[in-house]
Image (cartoon, rainbow, N blue to C red; front, side, top):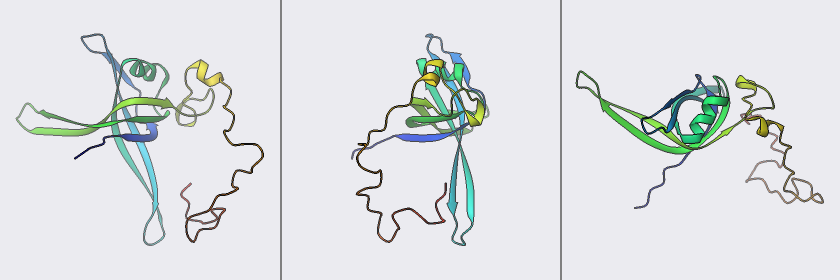
Length: 161
């Protein structure tokens, strides 16, 4: 049977990155990521739920994170799940599920820091936004059909954003 192990997360750092180097000289950074989820309960109440995820970055990605990210920085992480297992000094077996990052994208506005910005390398902050890929002759919603029973404009109050 085939298997597939991919994770994509968007969240904010819970602490400053911890950059270190292993004996071979390879950079490694550990991040704490808080990922928020908002959903509606059966009673109609909105419930916010935060999941805390440990992320490990390697190589140049680790160095970039250590240089530009701080606690509260918004970031997109793409990677794979990995189960770490170890035994404590008193003989107890422990395990922890974490994400090994393959790709990291810093999010946020220009020049901002923390939860509101995150910034990025100077070249990324000053780059002009890319042009939209849609043709100029057609309005953005032309030809769009909503799923069964939903109005075309979204219009519902249960949209979580």
